[in-house]
Image (tube, rainbow, N blue to C red):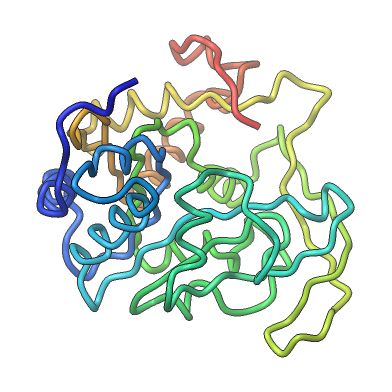
Length: 270
């Protein structure tokens, strides 16, 4: 499929501004590489980096950009080396983690790559719990971060599981996984990490449409487009608060088992 008319770095900044992303923000980006394909003035191989640099430029020196580079290593019986283990969730994250000045967290399941003013704060420390208060997601929340989806929907937003754990939903539970993580000094460390897994005895695949509708109705979900690709953004505080309110009314609203009660058609994410 043709990417259509090209976009520029200025177009990227303008689109971010339209969804409320400002200089100095801490932004977690879930993105599809199709957005980068639209930067037709740049050689094809350089387009993902050009897009990421444009986003970082908009955030400025006081801002921080974060992308997921999840590996799920321990669930597959693999050790985790943050310098080597490839991310499994898209081209943009893989390109980003190799860019100068990017730091990667030590979570052997849900690592993230970050660059900017708060990169060290967000990625430092051991990952004893993937979605606990001191996980990356907890730190992102405390940093009053924002979450953007470029060419994708809220369905991919893993911050949800941090909120679900904090609210003690009954369709997920803590499960431990073991393996080795290579430390910054090069040594391997035996590590146990706790993952808030879904209950496979229930129809527990995630369904984010009820939350998306609630956020939009409340005026907390901002939408625009970047060329031919959609862009949405939500503040972590609003995502947390609206999820809490929704689950207080419909405790199963965000899984297939109960999504119909909240007026959504089923559709899943593990």
